[in-house]
Image (cartoon, rainbow, N blue to C red; front, side, top):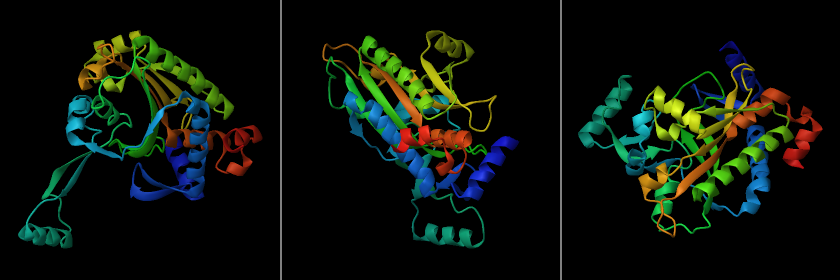
Length: 302
């Protein structure tokens, strides 16, 4: 924890991150954003020729879709919903009085139809399902969104609002597993090209929920999810900065995603934690971008 706080303090002192008074909720400097923009251009350079359809969703999603996703079965403590005042004039006066007296003014706040997006790909599946059958050549989608997970922490790599860039592939089992392997290979080379020390590990897939140790072990045995781990605040406990997920036909079944031949679509995704990758770069190469190794700067900025 001391290393996490020390790194966070240095990020604050340098102005790269801006303290808002809430753990895990930070402003970012122009320099921090420039590093993320440069890395996203690297993603585009490597994946652009694949012809993915770019879609950008807001950081909130239809609450009904959120409920159907099953996220609350697994991670209720991480979920966030958007609430608004829904009272009458008298309730409004009471609210203002509560605020004036420093009391809880949120009791008249009611849930809206919007839930905060926990993963960039969640709104995609119902969207594609409404289009009808997917061609036998498969579908490929490029996503980027702010995501929310309620886990306040002094670890700068564990933020409550963060950006996730994803490629999502839908098609046959062979098609989507080939896609995932391709991006695993690409991911390793990408991180090496920007001077980051990495390792790949098998992980438990959060999309399938927390149904006990037996299921978790089964997921590891099936290699449904791999994570690319990079040191950020600790060499011993590395941080997952990329993930490579194969959902089998779980989302196809849940959302009614079908292929042109009537079979249920399989899905896979690759996710980039953009803030985490930027933090890994600062942790590895220093807080002054101008002093980063020339080869790294050339890869990112040309």
